[in-house]
Image (cartoon, rainbow, N blue to C red):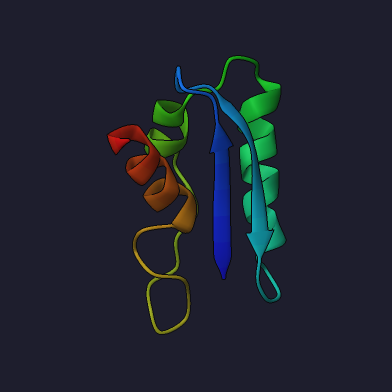
Length: 75
């Protein structure tokens, strides 16, 4: 899965793109939900609580949304 996070220089989240298999679209819904609150920032994505199912049944420990927000905050 590829996850692209779009944000403004001041840290406000503008949107996201996801390219992947089944189950990838919920990540867009998660970002859209945070944006629709108004004024969503990279920190909001980084500290958001996403559902987790441990391997081998579920995704890795670090969700791609959290990883993208962490990388963006370092730039």
